[in-house]
Length: 113
Image 1 (tube, rainbow, N blue to C red):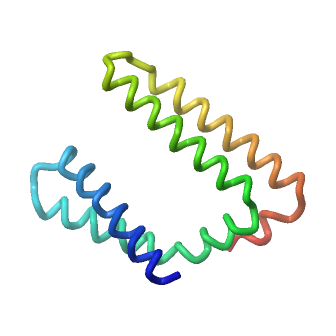
Image 2: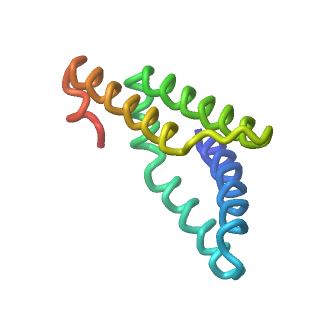
């Protein structure tokens, strides 16, 4: 379990580095972004993993978000613009529906944390 978290931290740290490089011109800002991202992932990984294990539909929601973002990036790479407003609305609506499902299924809110 610890090894998985460390490997995921490395993968997401690389993502943070790429994002920081795209947004910042100073190396200090890039280093700070990576350190903060890894710190947050280590701090909250247990609570998030427990919540996701108890609610498998959240896994499917996360997968659908990854697919949505991947398709959007491919479309952008092919010079087909997709308005970010549509993407954000679709994601927000999906989260809202998932929250309703979790609330309907029981005391999911009491178990998060």
